[in-house]
Length: 100
Image (cartoon, rainbow, N blue to C red; front, side, top):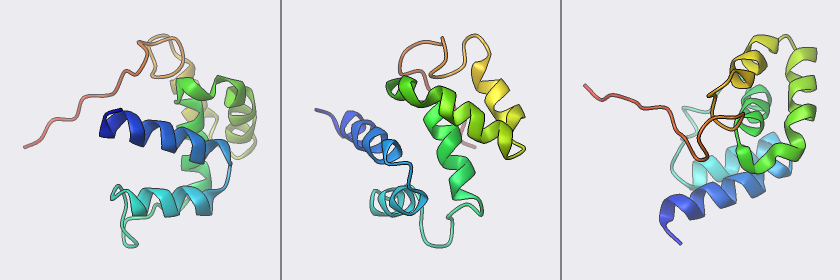
């Protein structure tokens, strides 16, 4: 298994816990975040990540409900659009980021 596949698999397992503290710990441990770069609203980010993860399709309805109930319906709507990662887009699709 590649490092990327291993990271994604463990991320999905961590997201499935629905525990913002566990998500924070994993993303810091894996070098994705530092203590200084942890988002202010980890719980909202966690639900967005769940909704955007095609491996967690059984949690998508719950994620949409949580996001809508917490004023994040627009985030859910973006991920519901055709072609959005995890919601009808290409499996494993990732947004492209350009470096300067």
